[in-house]
Length: 236
Image (cartoon, rainbow, N blue to C red; front, side, top):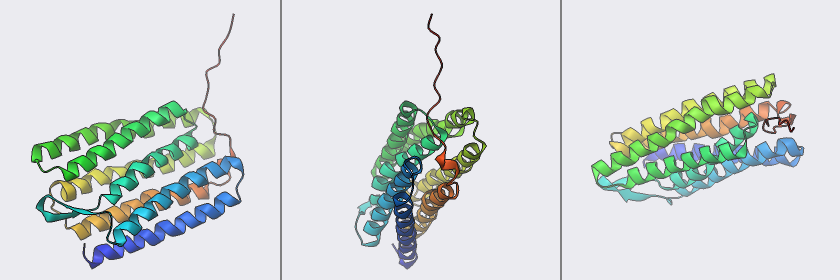
């Protein structure tokens, strides 16, 4: 990776570390209801900062087909942080944990498929993994755009509905860019490694740091209970 890529990694590392520190400070002074959001975001940005430090330090990479530098540390980061982002969204929505777990499962399979595609030497195998990853991506997007949203609407809390709408669409839009960058970096190898690093760093900062501060900005709304809606039963 060139100097531009190193600069991007440095910026990403600093942004994530600062956000992590802010979240730790917020969590220390928050009540139990708000603390769960701050803890979640602490680990999202904390894990990502570890990944960026590894890449910045010359670790967490290997050479793949065509002698291209491949940062596998990024995939370790995503395998941990993207489920946490989904958990965060689920908590805001008040979604039940079974559904959250199912969406997280699809998300992890998507990340694994992306990694396997990136390191594949055989072209047909590479694109099979890409298609499998996209097949897992679709239910994740559907769940965030519809399932979780329908749940948060049932809470009849305008502030939480507004907050969920903002952070969910931020996440969906940013996550749609990741496979595009993958196509022209790990996929076709059209982008330089430095351009790839810059693109991923920008998306990581927005989808993690900006996401986190949007959560913080809704401090008052986060005090509302987020229990999942339950169906009433009538016993005869």
